[in-house]
Length: 197
Length: 203
Image (cartoon, rainbow over all chains, first blue to last red; front, side):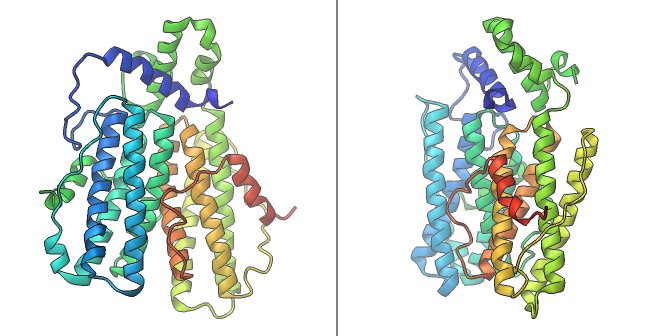
């Protein structure tokens, strides 16, 4: 009976909308933080966040700032983020065949790395909390059922990272209490911008 | 509810209605009669099922932590603190989901009697089952959410699943396990989620 779900209806609507929108020249190079929604736009936004996270952990791991259990955790999270990037690149090709997959932005975390273990853990926690809040805000806008399922399966993994990193940072693991709070794009991008070159 | 047909907006209900009607006009109403009927139906039956299953899982968790805090011998301070915080969240989830059910004119059943076997014999056993229950919660919400029709139900499910995932990770961390079983949390169908809860329900 899955044909009767809201998602398949919304997906059918999306096909119709896409047909209407074709040739309207919407800008595939629009910044990920822009306002127009649509699955391709949401994929690009999520991909931006995942690229930033992946870069961050790659630099943390190769700089050897962490040790013991924290180093192992950074490696595990790095691996998760790499898989998220790959999955979202695939989703991009699937929901918008023929449109370019978003390029990786250039990032700079040198100040964070210079700050040592404490600054690295705090930044990791901040990035993960932002990521979880961002996915939560986007989920309701997604039209494609498969993309929604992918976003949900990533959202809860970001939340896992966030909780444990908060704890390691000495912050409350569940800062919003029993109900997580969604983070809108403007808030997200204003916190991510500082790491983009 | 039918205002969605006339007033363009951004709620999923409206999208749903416009989508269904758009398909109807494009391919002939007869072909999509059931879809339109479903879209126009009284508050979705699926949503009620999702909320009631979520309520059961939250009642299960709340009872588990409440009794664990009383019964597990020699709980360490960090585990006790974690269990207390989680219990507080699960109680709030039960409250919110009960209210949601009532708003949907559906029943918010009282919790059944639960039986957790020998999970309270030690901290180790308690944490092992805590992890299993939290993971079931995460997968159940992730599996059910894409089928939800109403905005407020989807919003609540999203807000809660993030919290369940945080619980799951913290329990795993406490046990010295990887905090995530993989890069993607696997969704569970509602029937599988219910089947995972069944063994703890006393009949």
